[in-house]
Image (cartoon, rainbow, N blue to C red; front, side, top):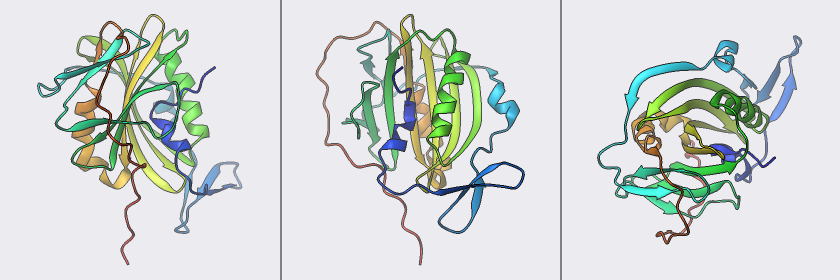
Length: 236
């Protein structure tokens, strides 16, 4: 099975050393951070991991999201605001990622749109496949939210989670949509200490997901690929 990497592809793109992990006396795994503090490897509440809630609010793309990008593999795509986002080359080569984006106002927020051909039976099944892979590749993981949402008339799985990757804390936000042949996902991530300020912009971006006929090979403007977001400088 192909790697179901979603926004977690950042886990493989940072060339810094992993954190040290240890086991407590009661058998729980912890990660030791560079600042001499520690966290449990998985701090997700068991109920949060097992349960998917339903959000009855109807979500729609913003009126500024006018540019449509279609998946080449699935009957889905998304609208985005070209004044706020630009397409760039993905930082790693993978068949999953179809488009990568960076924000025009803040280069520390990044986004990807991906798809995979595979027989996923339900959004719950997709969650059960995806989360263990993200957990295995994270030094620290916490699922904050997973809920069904109706966005632009389609049912999606919305997930939000925190992860410490190679010593850096990230926040992720994604929408996943099932098609007849597989699934599509649209995701944003940024540093944990910037998430609250950028949360609205990130959610507006991933709410552009729509059902549409898959596109053929098309020409899009692709800008020079930036490196992954630089870690904020520590104050002296």
